[in-house]
Image (cartoon, rainbow, N blue to C red; front, side, top):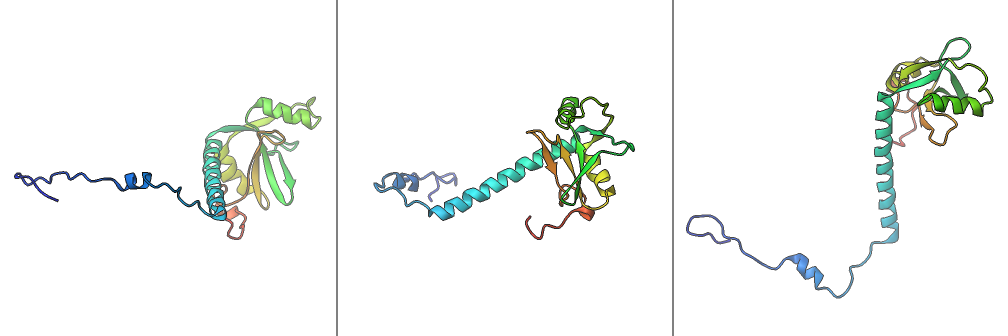
Length: 163
């Protein structure tokens, strides 16, 4: 590097190494298909985790409708040893669920509960592992299972290192 009389370095121009690559007549070797496939799979997993984190954050900030059972408790269902609190995004989703169950003729009493309260307060009160099923039975339904990062760690089910 040279400097002018004022001590400031003068720019030296040289051909870019990128320009040298452009002159190659042979295309660069492609990655091994297995490595590219594994990389793509990892990227898909990272993308899915980011998208789920966004959905989880939205759910935690949103008030949802939770029907009450005959005893006045939050309505839930047991599936494979997990107790799922059933929540609905709006009255239309709850009405579609009632219709699908063949119970559209009865009155459905419900409470409005913040998603974060369901996950952080109500799920730990359930006997055994529990989570929240949002808009159960619909094509847009979503499960918030009893795993760390969704429910409190004290009631999370250990998945044996699949995180």
